Image (cartoon, rainbow, N blue to C red; front, side, top):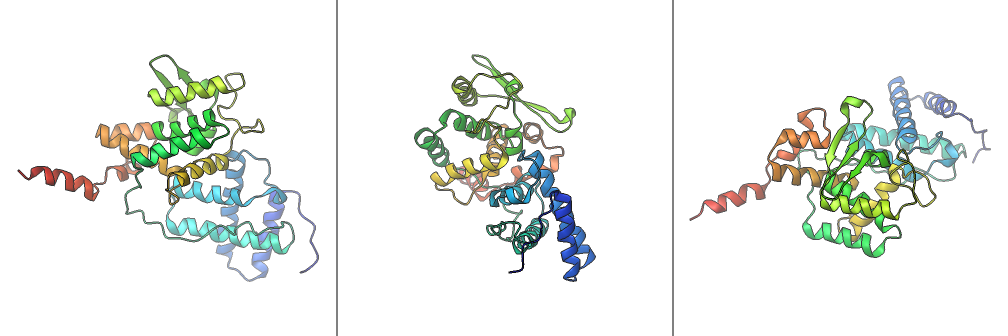
Length: 305
């Protein structure tokens, strides 16, 4: 292995070195621009969503790359070719910093290109799976009140993981029989308020009662180190409880999908579903209105005298 090259201090300098290496290996100009754009988007996600400084190469973790791919796949809903293009960029960058000895591990080891079938309806959780997740929090969690509040906000409100980590104490309004949650957005006109049902109110109240007192501007969810929880930490927790429930095939965003399908099933109103999910266009909401085989079978069976 060649001698270790000096590590650039700034992310932009590291990215420039990577792009120069791509040119040296005779990659097309389009590939260089595309990979550079992908990595700049990763850096923005790293700072805004994971809330980490940098990025600094030596501090990068495999979970940072995995959280970013989950974000572009499930939150931004990029197409399969777009997701795989990001994966290719992260793989090339991981190989580059490993060969330069700027990092000790291949950070892209857990990333796999895959086909995303957007024609299939979102996965549903059975009532048994939901009960198993809740039981896992109660029985196996070191931070049960906090984790239960996280889980219930996703099950009862359909929040995105990025929205969860941006919540502050001021965003929660709790009374004896009613409550609401303010969900912040990049622009004030895109903020929304979601009513809280009994399960969500109870979980949030238990979490606040068990938390160290703080000001209203403090983050609602704190890690064991006393720092705001990041996207990767929340995704890891939810994935763990999904595994306890026997749904290793699902991810944190599938709880939002589950909420959306259940909400639409009970309300029958596409506009209301759009509003509670915070979709800017109705097109993103229509996927939850697709009929399944079961939706068709039940009314047909009911026609039989």
